[in-house]
Length: 357
Image (cartoon, rainbow, N blue to C red; front, side):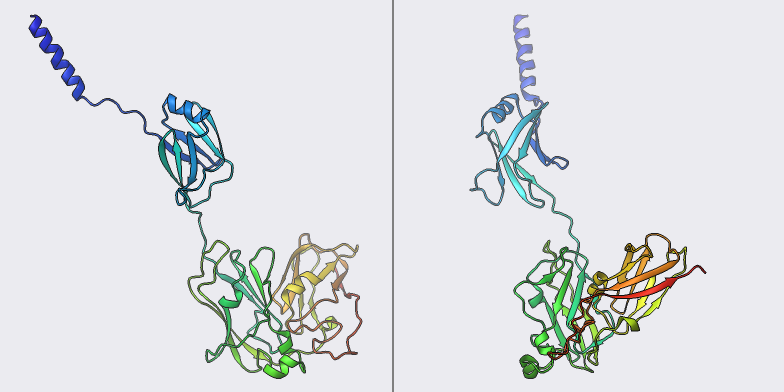
C-alpha cells in the first residue's frame, strides 16, 4: 500500500513538472499620444522598485545612437504601470531604445503624415505680361524649404533654351511669413533702360517671345517632401509698360445697397497683386474702413463686405506706394529720368456714391 502511494505521488509530481507554468506578463512599452509619456507595463514589483529608486536602472536613447547618453527623463508609478516622461518630446518617425532594469525595449514612433506640395497659383496670372515685368510670385500649397529657388526654378524660352541669370541673386530668398509664397525678382538692372546691365545683356524677357517657368520635381517642402513631378507655367511677353499709374482711369463696378455684392475695380494694366491687396482700401461714409474679403488677380481688385452695403459716399484710398508689375507708381514710371519723378506722397482718393435703387 505504501509502495502504491509512493508511486502515485511520483507520478503526480512528474505530471506537474511536465505541465507548463503560466508565464509572467511580458514587459512592454508604448507611447501615450495625449501626454507624450512612455507607459511601461508588465514589470515585476522588484523591477518597478528599482526603476523608481535607481537613476541608472532606466535609460532612453535613439536606437541609431547606442553610444549616446540617455535622455533626461522623470519616472513615476500609476498602478502597475511605470510612467516615463521625457524632458523633450520624442520625434515622430524615430525609433528609441529603452532599458528598464536590464530589459531592452524598442519604441517606434509612427512617421508624421506628409502632404505632397504643389503650386496653387502663379502671378501675374495673365497669359500676356509686360516685357519689363519686375516680379513673379509662386504660391505653394505647403510651407516650403528655404534656399532652393536658385537651383530648382528656371526660366526657359519656347525652344527650351534656359535664360541666363534672369532673377536677381539675393543672399536671402523672398518668402512670406508662412513660407508658401515666393517672390522671384527679375533683375531690375537688366530691365531699366540705359543702365550697364541692360546695355550689356538686355532684359530677361523679350517682347513677342514665349516663355515657361519651370519648377523642378526636386523642389521640396519644409518637411522634406518633394514635388515628384515637374511643374511648368507658360506665358507670352507683350510690350513694356512705362506709364505712371492713374487711378482716375480705373473702371469701378458699384454694388447695390442691402447686398453683399463685391465692389470691383478693373485696372487699365496688370498691377502687382500683392501690392494691390495691401495698398488699396475702402472707407465707409462715416470714415471707417470697410472690412471684408479682398481679392486681386492683378487685373482687378474687389471687396466683398462683411455687412450689407448702405447708401452713401464711399472712398477708395490708393496708397502712393502702389506699383504695377513693371514697378511704375502713381508718382513716376520705373524708367523715369532724374528730375521727372513726382514728389507725390499723398494717397489718391476716388469717391463713389452707392445709392438706394
